Image (tube, rainbow, N blue to C red; front, side, top):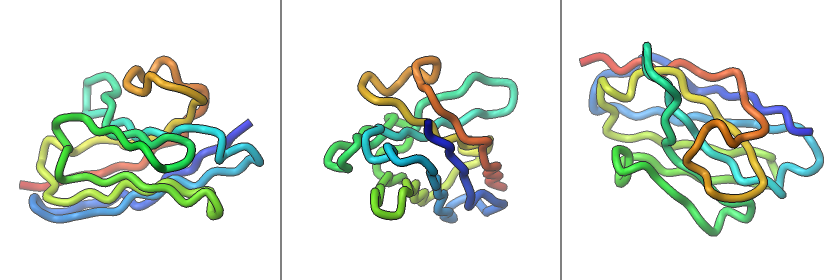
Length: 123
């Protein structure tokens, strides 16, 4: 069992940056891959980025490549999403989620979810 809690959301101007954190509880956290999903108002959750259990492999949606960086610290049971050059279309709720194995892009395949953190990017 893994419990996930996100933090770090907020209001930022376009071009600004935010760092989201996902802190986990549970002894087996280091066995899970973790991903971030974005849910814009009125839309389904979309894949943003994922990192495998060891942190050696990362995956990004095309829309965030070069702007976002995902990282993890298994000792701290934490996965971060550093977001740069934010755009108004990045606005929405960001969720972290965990699962054992790929593929990572389909939100319906994840076992554990956090409650989400709101990101608002003003133009």
